[in-house]
Length: 303
Ligand code: 13P
Ligand code: SF4
Image (cartoon, rainbow, N blue to C red; front, top):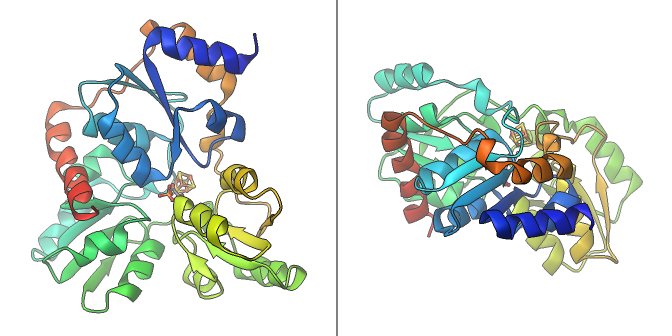
């Protein structure tokens, strides 16, 4: 029996659904029941009917699944897999800014802890941020923690007034202008597809900006043959699988989220073999009550 066959049989036996983000290794994406961007995964998590969710991603994704479907047991493949950006803001900082700007809506990128979500009015992901923020009645928007996504959204919504936090994704931050200019010179026919977590100078040089799922959709429907991809290289698995005759190039060799790479087939197999002994995600009752509201509000406004 191969490791994939073993995992598939254990999933049935233990009543487990595996949700995976596009940034995890291709072989993990292949054995997952569902692969998606953060928005699609949140929607899927809310509807899971199996008893157990095994999350192949980073901690804020597992926490969101627990918040949206609290009666399920949610496990992380590696519970040390965190998000550098999510760690750039805490609940106390949000409370302080709220005091300073009492009329502002706190819009929280889903890449954040449950404690930070609990202090927020609404959550967004990269694929629905413009739509959700445009549906907010408040004019002033305190957007946390990603300053690049905030600027991207602000550009589309000039009628809103943005208050920025200085967070960023350490991986997308390493996608630099010089490397992109070099890649464009090397592949002059390639279109540049970027994630909105990239810095503004990268987005300006891009032909398309969108979430991981949006980038995959664009490449599927577009007629070009070559693409420079400015996001984590896990997306190359779906891009190549869906477009075997097209070429995809990274901007540089820094586009790797080491936390996503902590998710391995061996860990999945070992967790499933001994699921009963695993530590599931447990959140404080009060935090859960507060933190699920902005996530549910996102699902309503993003529809
Ligand atoms: P998506 O919302 O595109 O899945 O991105 C999540 C993420 O962590 C990007 O770094
Ligand atoms: Fe967080 Fe960046 Fe990794 Fe996405 S790529 S999970 S934002 S550290």
